[in-house]
Length: 369
Image (tube, rainbow, N blue to C red):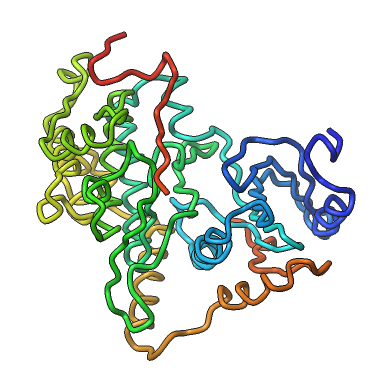
Protein backbone atom coordinates (compact mmCIF):
# COMPACT_ATOMS: atom_id res chain seq x y z
CA UNK A 1 0.00 0.00 0.00
CA UNK A 2 1.40 3.40 -0.92
CA UNK A 3 2.37 5.98 1.68
CA UNK A 4 -0.24 8.38 0.29
CA UNK A 5 -3.00 5.86 0.98
CA UNK A 6 -1.69 5.59 4.54
CA UNK A 7 -1.57 9.39 4.83
CA UNK A 8 2.21 9.46 5.25
CA UNK A 9 4.66 11.82 3.64
CA UNK A 10 7.82 10.33 2.15
CA UNK A 11 9.78 12.08 4.89
CA UNK A 12 7.63 10.47 7.60
CA UNK A 13 7.94 7.08 5.93
CA UNK A 14 11.73 7.46 5.86
CA UNK A 15 11.85 8.44 9.54
CA UNK A 16 9.81 5.40 10.54
CA UNK A 17 11.87 3.12 8.32
CA UNK A 18 15.11 4.35 9.90
CA UNK A 19 13.75 3.21 13.26
CA UNK A 20 12.62 -0.18 11.95
CA UNK A 21 8.89 0.51 11.50
CA UNK A 22 6.70 0.04 8.44
CA UNK A 23 3.04 1.05 8.55
CA UNK A 24 0.95 -1.40 6.54
CA UNK A 25 -2.75 -0.88 7.27
CA UNK A 26 -5.13 1.62 8.81
CA UNK A 27 -7.13 0.10 11.66
CA UNK A 28 -9.27 3.02 12.79
CA UNK A 29 -9.34 6.60 13.95
CA UNK A 30 -10.60 8.79 16.75
CA UNK A 31 -11.03 12.51 17.24
CA UNK A 32 -7.33 13.42 17.19
CA UNK A 33 -5.56 10.16 16.43
CA UNK A 34 -5.37 7.36 13.88
CA UNK A 35 -4.33 3.77 14.52
CA UNK A 36 -2.35 1.65 12.07
CA UNK A 37 -1.09 -1.89 11.96
CA UNK A 38 2.70 -1.74 11.83
CA UNK A 39 5.56 -4.16 11.24
CA UNK A 40 8.72 -3.74 13.29
CA UNK A 41 12.04 -5.12 12.06
CA UNK A 42 14.80 -5.51 14.65
CA UNK A 43 17.78 -3.20 14.14
CA UNK A 44 20.18 -6.10 13.57
CA UNK A 45 17.60 -7.60 11.18
CA UNK A 46 18.19 -10.98 12.83
CA UNK A 47 15.18 -11.18 15.13
CA UNK A 48 11.66 -12.01 13.92
CA UNK A 49 9.53 -9.17 12.67
CA UNK A 50 6.84 -8.11 15.08
CA UNK A 51 3.29 -6.90 14.49
CA UNK A 52 2.44 -3.75 16.41
CA UNK A 53 -0.28 -1.13 16.50
CA UNK A 54 0.76 2.49 16.05
CA UNK A 55 -1.36 5.34 17.36
CA UNK A 56 -0.45 8.58 15.58
CA UNK A 57 -1.59 11.74 17.35
CA UNK A 58 -1.46 14.90 15.22
CA UNK A 59 -1.42 17.85 17.61
CA UNK A 60 -1.87 20.32 14.76
CA UNK A 61 -5.45 19.12 14.40
CA UNK A 62 -6.23 18.89 18.12
CA UNK A 63 -7.68 21.50 20.51
CA UNK A 64 -5.24 23.40 22.70
CA UNK A 65 -6.78 21.91 25.85
CA UNK A 66 -6.03 18.41 24.57
CA UNK A 67 -2.44 19.28 23.60
CA UNK A 68 -1.64 21.12 26.83
CA UNK A 69 -3.40 18.91 29.36
CA UNK A 70 -4.67 15.52 28.21
CA UNK A 71 -1.88 14.46 25.84
CA UNK A 72 1.09 15.17 28.16
CA UNK A 73 -0.82 13.43 30.94
CA UNK A 74 -1.46 10.36 28.76
CA UNK A 75 2.15 10.09 27.63
CA UNK A 76 3.48 10.59 31.14
CA UNK A 77 1.30 7.73 32.37
CA UNK A 78 2.04 5.39 29.46
CA UNK A 79 5.79 5.43 30.05
CA UNK A 80 5.30 4.28 33.65
CA UNK A 81 3.03 1.29 33.10
CA UNK A 82 4.19 -2.32 33.09
CA UNK A 83 1.48 -4.89 33.77
CA UNK A 84 0.49 -8.14 32.01
CA UNK A 85 -3.12 -6.96 31.64
CA UNK A 86 -2.33 -3.48 30.32
CA UNK A 87 -1.31 -3.06 26.70
CA UNK A 88 2.49 -3.11 26.36
CA UNK A 89 4.10 0.06 24.99
CA UNK A 90 6.93 -0.68 22.56
CA UNK A 91 8.14 2.87 22.03
CA UNK A 92 6.97 6.47 21.84
CA UNK A 93 8.54 9.30 19.91
CA UNK A 94 7.67 12.72 18.58
CA UNK A 95 8.37 14.16 15.15
CA UNK A 96 7.23 17.68 14.47
CA UNK A 97 3.57 17.94 15.47
CA UNK A 98 3.00 14.17 15.54
CA UNK A 99 3.40 11.68 18.35
CA UNK A 100 3.88 8.01 17.47
CA UNK A 101 2.84 5.48 20.12
CA UNK A 102 3.79 1.90 19.20
CA UNK A 103 2.11 -0.82 21.24
CA UNK A 104 1.31 -4.48 21.19
CA UNK A 105 -1.06 -5.47 18.39
CA UNK A 106 -4.35 -7.05 19.53
CA UNK A 107 -4.74 -10.01 17.21
CA UNK A 108 -8.35 -10.65 18.28
CA UNK A 109 -9.55 -7.05 18.25
CA UNK A 110 -11.42 -5.40 21.11
CA UNK A 111 -13.98 -6.84 23.49
CA UNK A 112 -16.97 -5.13 21.89
CA UNK A 113 -16.07 -6.51 18.45
CA UNK A 114 -15.67 -9.95 19.99
CA UNK A 115 -19.08 -9.84 21.69
CA UNK A 116 -20.80 -8.60 18.52
CA UNK A 117 -19.25 -11.43 16.53
CA UNK A 118 -19.61 -14.23 19.08
CA UNK A 119 -22.46 -13.30 21.39
CA UNK A 120 -22.54 -13.06 25.17
CA UNK A 121 -19.42 -14.37 26.92
CA UNK A 122 -19.72 -17.65 28.83
CA UNK A 123 -19.56 -17.03 32.55
CA UNK A 124 -16.37 -19.08 32.99
CA UNK A 125 -14.58 -16.96 30.37
CA UNK A 126 -16.05 -13.71 31.70
CA UNK A 127 -14.62 -14.65 35.10
CA UNK A 128 -11.09 -14.93 33.69
CA UNK A 129 -11.36 -11.67 31.77
CA UNK A 130 -13.00 -9.71 34.59
CA UNK A 131 -10.24 -10.81 36.97
CA UNK A 132 -7.55 -9.74 34.50
CA UNK A 133 -9.17 -6.34 34.04
CA UNK A 134 -9.66 -5.93 37.79
CA UNK A 135 -5.97 -6.68 38.38
CA UNK A 136 -5.03 -4.10 35.74
CA UNK A 137 -7.27 -1.46 37.28
CA UNK A 138 -6.07 -2.32 40.79
CA UNK A 139 -2.48 -1.79 39.59
CA UNK A 140 -3.40 1.63 38.16
CA UNK A 141 -5.14 2.63 41.37
CA UNK A 142 -2.11 1.57 43.43
CA UNK A 143 -0.09 3.98 41.30
CA UNK A 144 -2.75 6.62 42.08
CA UNK A 145 -3.93 6.62 38.45
CA UNK A 146 -7.57 6.49 37.38
CA UNK A 147 -8.39 5.32 33.86
CA UNK A 148 -11.67 7.26 33.48
CA UNK A 149 -12.64 5.62 30.18
CA UNK A 150 -13.13 1.93 30.92
CA UNK A 151 -15.31 0.40 28.20
CA UNK A 152 -15.42 -2.67 25.99
CA UNK A 153 -13.74 -0.84 23.10
CA UNK A 154 -10.73 -0.15 25.33
CA UNK A 155 -10.29 -3.82 26.26
CA UNK A 156 -8.06 -5.58 23.71
CA UNK A 157 -7.84 -9.34 23.20
CA UNK A 158 -4.48 -10.94 22.45
CA UNK A 159 -3.71 -13.97 20.28
CA UNK A 160 -3.95 -16.31 23.28
CA UNK A 161 -7.20 -14.71 24.44
CA UNK A 162 -5.96 -12.67 27.35
CA UNK A 163 -7.33 -9.14 27.76
CA UNK A 164 -5.32 -5.94 27.90
CA UNK A 165 -6.58 -2.57 29.09
CA UNK A 166 -5.80 0.21 26.60
CA UNK A 167 -6.37 3.89 25.72
CA UNK A 168 -5.25 6.21 28.49
CA UNK A 169 -6.41 9.41 26.83
CA UNK A 170 -8.54 10.40 29.83
CA UNK A 171 -6.34 8.85 32.54
CA UNK A 172 -5.02 11.08 35.30
CA UNK A 173 -3.29 11.03 38.66
CA UNK A 174 -5.63 11.26 41.63
CA UNK A 175 -3.14 12.86 44.02
CA UNK A 176 -1.17 16.09 43.67
CA UNK A 177 2.58 16.58 44.08
CA UNK A 178 2.16 16.71 47.88
CA UNK A 179 0.21 13.45 48.01
CA UNK A 180 -3.14 15.14 48.61
CA UNK A 181 -6.23 13.47 47.12
CA UNK A 182 -7.59 15.29 44.06
CA UNK A 183 -11.18 14.82 42.95
CA UNK A 184 -12.10 14.90 39.27
CA UNK A 185 -14.40 17.52 37.83
CA UNK A 186 -14.01 16.69 34.14
CA UNK A 187 -17.10 15.20 32.53
CA UNK A 188 -15.18 12.60 30.56
CA UNK A 189 -15.39 9.03 29.36
CA UNK A 190 -18.31 7.41 27.56
CA UNK A 191 -21.90 8.04 28.52
CA UNK A 192 -23.02 4.40 28.62
CA UNK A 193 -20.24 3.58 31.09
CA UNK A 194 -20.33 6.79 33.17
CA UNK A 195 -21.12 6.43 36.87
CA UNK A 196 -24.05 8.38 38.34
CA UNK A 197 -21.74 10.66 40.33
CA UNK A 198 -20.19 11.80 37.03
CA UNK A 199 -23.59 12.53 35.48
CA UNK A 200 -24.51 14.47 38.61
CA UNK A 201 -21.82 17.00 37.66
CA UNK A 202 -20.19 17.29 41.08
CA UNK A 203 -16.53 16.50 41.90
CA UNK A 204 -16.02 12.75 42.15
CA UNK A 205 -13.43 10.14 43.08
CA UNK A 206 -12.45 8.67 39.67
CA UNK A 207 -11.15 5.44 41.20
CA UNK A 208 -14.63 4.61 42.47
CA UNK A 209 -16.13 5.62 39.13
CA UNK A 210 -13.75 3.22 37.36
CA UNK A 211 -15.32 0.41 39.39
CA UNK A 212 -18.81 1.31 38.12
CA UNK A 213 -17.50 1.21 34.55
CA UNK A 214 -15.97 -2.21 35.22
CA UNK A 215 -19.43 -3.33 36.29
CA UNK A 216 -20.90 -2.12 32.99
CA UNK A 217 -18.22 -4.08 31.11
CA UNK A 218 -19.07 -7.23 33.07
CA UNK A 219 -22.80 -6.76 32.47
CA UNK A 220 -22.22 -6.39 28.71
CA UNK A 221 -20.04 -9.51 28.62
CA UNK A 222 -22.77 -11.57 30.25
CA UNK A 223 -25.79 -10.08 28.44
CA UNK A 224 -24.61 -8.76 25.07
CA UNK A 225 -26.63 -5.69 26.02
CA UNK A 226 -26.35 -2.37 27.86
CA UNK A 227 -27.96 -2.23 31.32
CA UNK A 228 -29.35 1.29 30.84
CA UNK A 229 -30.94 3.37 28.08
CA UNK A 230 -28.56 6.27 27.45
CA UNK A 231 -30.65 8.21 24.92
CA UNK A 232 -31.58 10.75 27.61
CA UNK A 233 -29.05 11.74 30.28
CA UNK A 234 -31.65 12.72 32.89
CA UNK A 235 -33.51 9.45 32.46
CA UNK A 236 -30.22 7.52 32.48
CA UNK A 237 -29.25 9.07 35.82
CA UNK A 238 -32.67 8.29 37.28
CA UNK A 239 -32.37 4.65 36.16
CA UNK A 240 -28.92 4.40 37.72
CA UNK A 241 -29.94 5.92 41.05
CA UNK A 242 -33.10 3.78 41.27
CA UNK A 243 -31.21 0.61 40.27
CA UNK A 244 -33.58 0.09 37.35
CA UNK A 245 -31.69 -2.52 35.39
CA UNK A 246 -32.09 -6.25 34.95
CA UNK A 247 -30.40 -9.24 33.42
CA UNK A 248 -31.81 -10.29 30.07
CA UNK A 249 -34.40 -13.05 30.38
CA UNK A 250 -32.37 -15.09 27.91
CA UNK A 251 -29.45 -15.43 30.36
CA UNK A 252 -30.82 -14.75 33.84
CA UNK A 253 -31.57 -18.40 34.60
CA UNK A 254 -28.15 -19.55 33.42
CA UNK A 255 -26.09 -17.12 35.52
CA UNK A 256 -24.79 -18.00 38.97
CA UNK A 257 -26.04 -16.16 42.04
CA UNK A 258 -22.43 -15.20 42.73
CA UNK A 259 -22.04 -13.21 39.50
CA UNK A 260 -25.44 -11.59 39.97
CA UNK A 261 -24.29 -10.44 43.40
CA UNK A 262 -21.04 -9.06 41.96
CA UNK A 263 -22.75 -7.07 39.19
CA UNK A 264 -25.27 -5.70 41.70
CA UNK A 265 -22.47 -4.47 43.98
CA UNK A 266 -20.52 -2.94 41.10
CA UNK A 267 -23.57 -1.09 39.75
CA UNK A 268 -24.28 0.36 43.20
CA UNK A 269 -25.15 4.08 42.87
CA UNK A 270 -24.12 4.84 46.47
CA UNK A 271 -20.35 5.33 46.26
CA UNK A 272 -19.96 4.45 49.96
CA UNK A 273 -21.51 1.02 49.32
CA UNK A 274 -20.05 0.23 45.90
CA UNK A 275 -17.54 -2.59 46.15
CA UNK A 276 -13.84 -1.78 46.06
CA UNK A 277 -11.34 -3.61 43.90
CA UNK A 278 -10.11 -5.96 46.63
CA UNK A 279 -13.72 -7.05 47.21
CA UNK A 280 -14.06 -7.80 43.50
CA UNK A 281 -10.88 -9.87 43.35
CA UNK A 282 -11.75 -11.71 46.56
CA UNK A 283 -15.39 -12.24 45.64
CA UNK A 284 -17.13 -15.60 45.79
CA UNK A 285 -17.54 -15.47 42.03
CA UNK A 286 -13.82 -15.23 41.28
CA UNK A 287 -13.17 -17.94 43.88
CA UNK A 288 -15.42 -20.34 41.96
CA UNK A 289 -12.33 -21.05 39.85
CA UNK A 290 -9.55 -21.82 42.39
CA UNK A 291 -6.88 -21.32 39.71
CA UNK A 292 -7.69 -17.60 39.71
CA UNK A 293 -6.89 -17.11 43.38
CA UNK A 294 -3.12 -17.24 42.85
CA UNK A 295 -1.20 -14.55 41.01
CA UNK A 296 1.06 -15.45 38.09
CA UNK A 297 4.72 -14.48 38.30
CA UNK A 298 4.12 -11.48 36.01
CA UNK A 299 1.13 -10.37 38.09
CA UNK A 300 3.17 -10.70 41.29
CA UNK A 301 5.99 -8.63 39.79
CA UNK A 302 3.55 -5.88 38.82
CA UNK A 303 2.01 -5.82 42.31
CA UNK A 304 5.48 -5.53 43.87
CA UNK A 305 6.51 -2.76 41.46
CA UNK A 306 3.37 -0.78 42.28
CA UNK A 307 3.96 -1.24 46.01
CA UNK A 308 7.59 -0.14 45.66
CA UNK A 309 6.53 2.94 43.71
CA UNK A 310 3.95 3.78 46.36
CA UNK A 311 6.60 3.49 49.10
CA UNK A 312 9.03 5.61 47.10
CA UNK A 313 6.39 8.26 46.56
CA UNK A 314 5.54 8.40 50.27
CA UNK A 315 9.21 8.61 51.18
CA UNK A 316 9.97 11.36 48.67
CA UNK A 317 9.43 15.05 49.09
CA UNK A 318 8.21 17.59 46.61
CA UNK A 319 7.39 16.94 43.00
CA UNK A 320 9.70 14.66 41.08
CA UNK A 321 10.50 15.65 37.54
CA UNK A 322 9.49 13.07 35.00
CA UNK A 323 9.91 12.56 31.31
CA UNK A 324 6.50 14.17 31.09
CA UNK A 325 8.00 17.56 32.00
CA UNK A 326 10.53 17.11 29.23
CA UNK A 327 7.75 16.42 26.77
CA UNK A 328 5.93 19.60 27.74
CA UNK A 329 8.94 21.71 26.85
CA UNK A 330 9.54 19.74 23.67
CA UNK A 331 6.11 20.77 22.40
CA UNK A 332 7.59 24.22 21.80
CA UNK A 333 9.89 22.53 19.30
CA UNK A 334 7.03 21.05 17.27
CA UNK A 335 8.39 22.39 14.00
CA UNK A 336 11.80 20.78 14.51
CA UNK A 337 12.98 18.01 12.18
CA UNK A 338 14.42 16.13 15.15
CA UNK A 339 12.79 13.03 16.57
CA UNK A 340 12.29 13.21 20.33
CA UNK A 341 12.40 9.73 21.85
CA UNK A 342 10.06 9.49 24.83
CA UNK A 343 10.13 5.77 25.51
CA UNK A 344 12.01 3.06 23.67
CA UNK A 345 11.48 -0.59 24.60
CA UNK A 346 12.36 -1.98 21.21
CA UNK A 347 14.91 -4.31 22.74
CA UNK A 348 12.52 -5.47 25.46
CA UNK A 349 9.16 -6.40 24.03
CA UNK A 350 7.38 -8.45 26.41
CA UNK A 351 -15.91 15.67 27.26
CA UNK A 352 -18.38 12.53 27.50
CA UNK A 353 -18.88 10.63 24.27
CA UNK A 354 -22.20 8.89 23.66
CA UNK A 355 -21.50 5.25 22.89
CA UNK A 356 -24.90 4.35 21.47
CA UNK A 357 -24.32 1.18 19.49
CA UNK A 358 -26.48 1.04 16.40
CA UNK A 359 -25.82 -2.57 15.55
CA UNK A 360 -28.63 -5.12 15.16
CA UNK A 361 -26.41 -7.73 16.83
CA UNK A 362 -26.30 -5.68 20.05
CA UNK A 363 -29.47 -5.81 22.14
CA UNK A 364 -31.10 -3.51 24.64
CA UNK A 365 -31.99 -5.21 27.96
CA UNK A 366 -35.63 -5.58 26.92
CA UNK A 367 -34.96 -7.16 23.53
CA UNK A 368 -34.67 -10.84 22.81
CA UNK A 369 -33.02 -12.68 19.92
